[in-house]
Length: 202
Image (cartoon, rainbow, N blue to C red; front, side, top):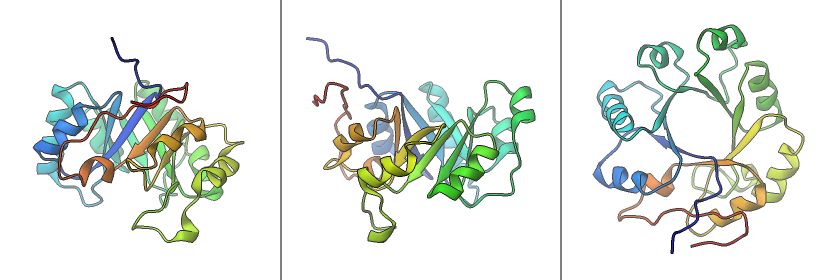
């Protein structure tokens, strides 16, 4: 019996380095896009990730660096939540029509800036509890939905997503989601992530 495909549109994976186990776990997933997340650019790690992405036809984005994205013919750029210097990118997008601009946001003010910067999708953090953020910074599904319910851009949840809570992503009614430690901090091979719009899981 053939398995149904996961319903989600994209699974964004934040990476600043890669090894053989991470490669195996990424290739198990469906509709993957990689975001090179290194704040201080590391050419050796970038080239390894770029080669891996190209070989496996995986979309590759980079954080806050338009020049490198164009130079290496990447799929787009992710503008970090605290980057408010980048102006509206409409003219840029008219020249590079296959180029995507994604924004990272933590709140309504961040969203306002990303909308003005021309982002089509925003990655909204943080939805679940994790070691990076305190409890009062965690949204949870209810607050996540309330804050983003009137946002016009496509919203993608990020933060604290693990194998115990990832099924709750269905409750956000979003088409994509983003992860990091779910793939990068595993000591063993992981299973394929399945989310179904009929609330069925494998």
